[in-house]
Amino acid sequence: MLEKPIGHSLDSALEINEAIGMVFPESRIYRIDHYLGKETVQNLMALRFANALFEPIWRAGHIDHVQITVAETLGVENRGSYYDHAGAMRDMLQNHLLQLLCLVAMEAPVRFDAKSIRGEKVKVLEALKPITGGDVQDKTVRGQYGAGRIGGHDVQAYYFEKNVDNDSDTETFVAVKAEIDNWRWAGVPFYLRTGKRMARKRSEIIITFKQVPHQLFSKGEVNRLVIGLQPEESISLQLMAKAPGKGMQLEPVELDLNLAHAFSSTRRWEAYERLLLDVIEGDSTLFMRRDEVEAAWNWVDPILRGWQSHYRKPRPYPAGTDGPEQARRLIEHQGRQWWRQAT
Image (cartoon, rainbow, N blue to C red; front, top):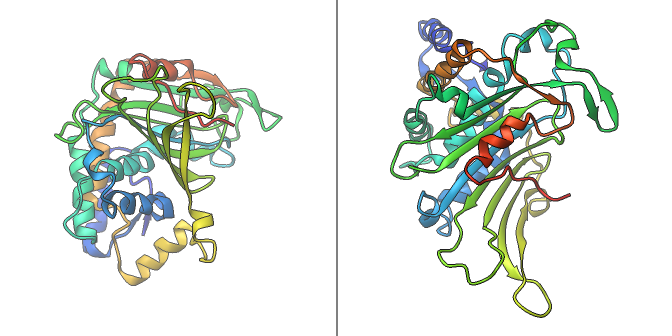
């Protein structure tokens, strides 16, 4: 069993995989990404492949864009010595967020088994458009948190954290506009972002559908499928409905599936609990295969190199906010906005 991230780059991942492969067959190697053990992540596959409702519209003709956010309110805590050499890209986006992207974008597997599912995920990673050279500046944003307030308490800047270099240029936030170059997803941007010391702790996938072809009503809202991974596991479909009263005033309403309530009589497993039991039973469905890891690094490495060659220090953002201003511009450049649930 290996915990993510596997390596620090494509070369180091290849070295690790070669060394382990000399001793163990691939069928006995389990590379853990604990996000794959979460109930809602697995429910994403059930939602897509066990219901006829979504398959006809799960494609470029009906989906405007996809957002995947993993936001934390915590800082680096006692992991400064590790994190200052990894950063948000290696620690989170290269594994957690790309795995979520794969589950959203993959084609239906022939069978629900490890070989078929992991094979479809690899196809998604291989179809990601490379982000190289000057595109790195246009399609990615790096950030680093400064001093601010979290939960009513003052918190210090990243470069004052324990075991962090005071001159560190490590990113604690990253946002990327990713594109998948295949028939199903051509022209649909996937906006990925993750960061520490952000306004709220949340992990969510937002599927935003295109507007209806002809607007009969004045309010041009859109339908969204909101898949919450944490702090609560839920699935919500936002539809437009008429508000009570005179005239046709439309408001979004939600059809909610709260998994904790729906299965209140069933004990919910922790992600690692499920994954460790799968290892014992020899089931590798929810683990990363070697070529998955290498395909992910093959896409991430040019971004890391682009950051070095077009050197810019990470954009600052105050702790307790949603990241640097440049991340807002990344998505608003095309008339979209980061989704934020009303509180």
